[in-house]
Length: 218
Image 1: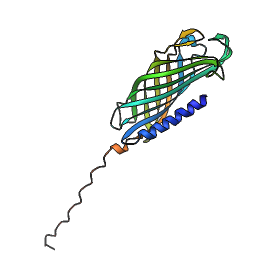
Image 2: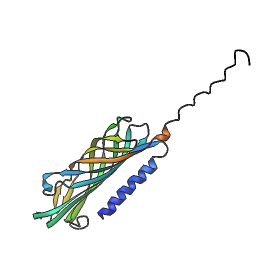
Image 3: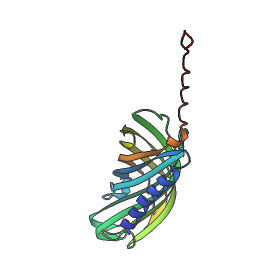
């Protein structure tokens, strides 16, 4: 099931980029690989690895982009006692879909900072280490996110940089315990930019110089 979600996210990212690149649109498709930091009541599974995809797009000259994102984080290990109703080898997983806006204040430079915010829907689960999505217990919640970072242009299209993200306002129930899945996250960003060329008008053609008449009248 995890692989299905990942394949769906990648396919959606490429479809959105291909569709939005028409009609003078421009944007970025960014892949995020990082670490998530949950609150202490998730210990010892409070620092799962994460993977995400974010697509942002807008008219080529606009600094404010629509942003659509997908993020998944997971961890597993053997726990000494009871962990939200599970014992032995336990896994946790978090699946998240988000929508919001990104502000790109710099459009023409090697270094491109950005800042964004939006809303999300999160699914959280605890279960056996290899089956935490469908086994054990799970819940879902709305929440809010903010993110900021900077990427550097490598050539005309490729991007590499760092991204920071925080999530607040989640509220889930696992094994009768009311907790949250709020987190901070730091990620390496690798992606590409696309579109924009159709919004730039071609330069005007230079006038053809008129032939000069000979002073002898020939």
